[in-house]
Length: 117
Image (cartoon, rainbow, N blue to C red):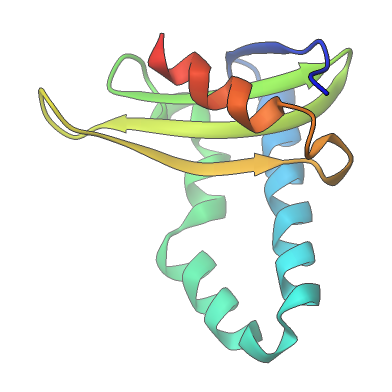
């Protein structure tokens, strides 16, 4: 069931905070689900500089080459996704995270579709 959401580029420190919270919630979920991979998860987040990049999101994600989107339902952050242009024909969609209670409701699909536009 699709729910009404708003999708927009992240432009404020408050939105950056909401995205970081989504990512931290996902990290906690994945650690709980795969406790045997705790060291690997730690290594991934460190090597990918996930929180460092997100902390600097307003200067790192500058359209049109890089975009960080946030989906909200009312004032609540429902999901996020990032995009990076690699060259004229290639791009990378990365870090799609949807809040647990919004999963299965079309948020991820809506975020992906928004990148196509």
